[in-house]
Amino acid sequence: MTNSQFQLFAAEAEHPPVVSATGDIDLANVNEFSDVLNRAAADSDAITVDLSDVTYCDSAAVRALFAVAATTKLGLIVPASGTIVTLLSISGLDRVATVVTRD
Amino acid sequence: MQRILERMQADLIDALGLAITVHDKRRDERPAVLASLGIGADFADAQLSGIGGPVPDALAYQVPVLSPDLWTDDRWPELTLATLCDRAPHHESSWEQVRGAVAVPGVWADDATVVVCCTLSQPASAATVASLITYEQLVSAALITTAAENASAIADIITVLQSRGAIEQAKGALMGLARCDADQAWKMLRRGSQEFNVKLRELSVAIVEHISGAPAEQPGAETPITPDERTREAARLMWAALSEAPLPQ
Image (cartoon, rainbow over all chains, first blue to last red; front, side):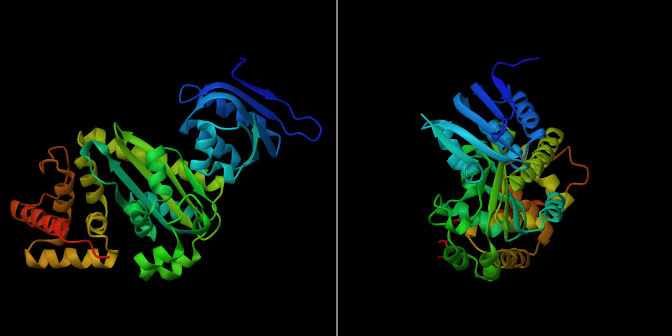
């Protein structure tokens, strides 16, 4: 079962595993998103989640990210502006994850 | 609800305060603290009074809100140690210990939301959020279950009241209305009970029934606390008097 919307790239040398997401993340697919995050975090103490191609994400995604950040050092790659950035700052997720902006 | 809070407190050893706040938008009422421990109610009430904070943000945006260091958080410039000490001086030593806070929202019926909030003596972390998410699900499930069994929102609240702490709930409502602390709310209830010569417990139920605006009849309840007409009238008068009184500054 491959899901093109969430891709997991294994860790390489100094770099932690990367989960790359695209499209919308909402209640309909947040479980898949969580599963991929958990798989990435399973054998690594740090993961990076690339959200720069995510078009929409809501509370469900924020919850999933908080949950994985509870046990893993979380790095986020986000677009320079937009709802995702707003969501991160409202929730304070940007205060517990390392956020890198990509434009 | 109180039992859930007690379990949370056992889990979150650094917790200084816990509160469950509900907002039923269908009734166009302000959010109210349903249950609390420690400084939880005072903390939630202060934020909801217009100062801002994790609880109103979690309600408004429906996302978990985390603050590792509350008093220095630039999201809520008015939420400061000095403001809270001023509002609830009896908790001054607790306010001084506060570091982090987390608020996690949930929806338990159409347009009815709940926020579970905790304040910690340590910086809050993603693990605090994860833990609160679990408890929020528990709280929402409890609210949904009671709502399903009783068919109306008031019935849920009544059920909560019956199982535990009828008086606590009314106190919370009074604290929200009169912007006072728990002690003052307790005195108000006791005075009301004496003045109108009604049982304090029944008066508490009648107050909650009154503010929810639902009919007092609850055919589904097993052992209902049913305030009589006189007690309801007392609750109505008391609430009206407090609603009209200028808020103490």
